[in-house]
Amino acid sequence: MNYWLMKSEPDEFSIRDLAARPQQTEGWHGIRNYQARNFMRDAMKVGDRVFFYHSSCKVPAIVGVAEIASDVYPDSSAWDPESDYFDPKSSPDSPRWLQLDIRFVKEFTKPVTLTAIKSHPGLTDMLLVQKGSRLSIQPVDEIHWQLIHQMAGESL
Image 1 (tube, rainbow, N blue to C red):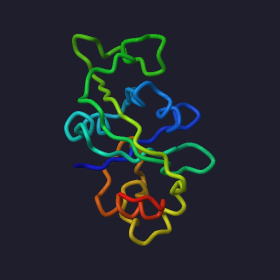
Image 2: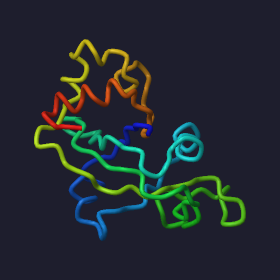
Image 3: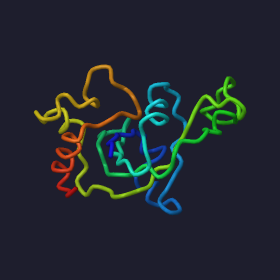
Image 4: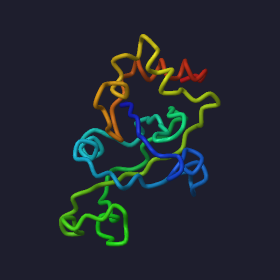
């Protein structure tokens, strides 16, 4: 199993929004970074676990866990001229962008804030806290996965 972190702005889509979806599942669309897309395409597998991270908010934090619930498929929002994610270079015949489904697993009762992550000596090499790392999808080492769960007071 691989571990990941996926960022979402909570005023756009929060972990509670995911929990409220039918089957607690939602298509993760709108990725417009090639490296993040390649992670989805080449490395993410059904059953992989994901930290759900609230970003661009007052207190950025890992707020819970989701899992990969589908293989990748074309992101049709790229073909919709009304979408914020429209890309005129993508088409149904030649899709440039992909998405996959994620499923809610749990919300942490104690979110793990970015400040707490940055101050933990065992997390200094976590991709999330590296200078210049702004990817909305990023891999998480197993040791970091375990430490974050400990910080959240959650069992694995």
